[in-house]
Structure formats: C-alpha cells, structure tokens
Length: 228
Image (cartoon, rainbow, N blue to C red; front, side):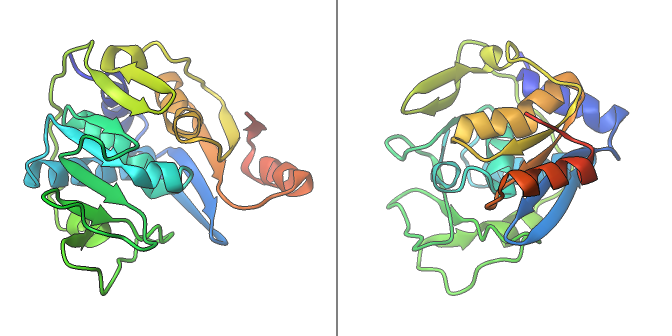
C-alpha cells in the first residue's frame, strides 16, 4: 500500500498545488509553504534518504524531539514515509540520524545530517567530521520523486509514548479549515500542522515562537485562521 499521508500529499500537489499548506511563524519570520513547495522539499529529502542507502529503514529524527515546531522537522517524517521508512525520535535503531544545529555530533557508523532550522533554509558551516548539512545536501537532490509501497502494519512513527503504523495514519481526522496551531509535542504538532490539513484539504498557521493571547488573536485575524 501507499502511505495514506503521502497519497494525500500527491493528490493535493496535483489539485491545489499553489494553495498554502502551512504558514510558519518562527525566529521572527513568516514563511509560507504552498502544497507544491512543501511536496518539493519532501521529494528532495526523500531522494536524499535514498542516496544515503536508508530507504526502507529507520530514520532517527531527534530534531523532531528538540525542535518539534520547526518547518524542517515537519518535512522529515513525510520524506521518511515516502521512502518506506520508520520515523522515530531516538537513536536506539537508526539507518540515518537527523539532528538540530546545537552541538551536532556524528553517530558512529550511521549517516548524520544537521538541520540549520533557518527560516530560509540557509545551511550550516564548520560541522564536525561525520555530520553533513541537511539544506545543502537536500537542495542538491533531484525534484523527481517516487513513493515506495509499504506494509500497512509496519510502524511509521515511534516515540516514547506512541507508535503509529503506516495504515493507521489514514485513520487520523482531517480538517478542511485553516487552523492556527501552537507548537506542542512532536506528533501532535505534526498532526495539527500537516497531517490533518493534508487528509482534510485544509491548511495551518503554525506559531513556533512565544505568543500571548493577544498576539494569537491578531494572527488569527490576519491569517483568517481559527485556533485549533
């Protein structure tokens, strides 16, 4: 079977590609990703997973644990699923490790990528031996994509308190609204900001920075979004 979230992304890229999928507020910046732009990042990242011989394996995305609301953290699970991988938040089992920019260290024997988390995807310099910059590596990948079939019962997501199969992702509730989302834990943020909008045809405004009630209300009005 095709992972249902990836199937929804492919459909959305074809039917509403120019529409916003997620509008991200973080580090004092506003960055809007159309469905097509988000899908392009997923495609490039999925091709990077393939290039690193991790397709069908396990991607340990610790960046999703340390920075759950950054837009780069939202890209990685879908890219992993597109290549038939399990995405988990620890490195107990890993064919590829993805970390944030703070003190990145190579995992011996495992390809390690560091995400800059920069709003405009600027890369990292002076990385330690064995750690490569995600932005530079991903942008060098082709745009063409293919999605790998997966066993429905195979794990798609694993963290300390949750395990979700590829088929189980299709049981999540979708939304057709434009919703204002605050960063919370990794899966809840991914679900509210990306998975529900893809499955239901909606979009999100993800606030990944401090914001009081007045600021959130103002963002809701300006973005025409309802608070999730």
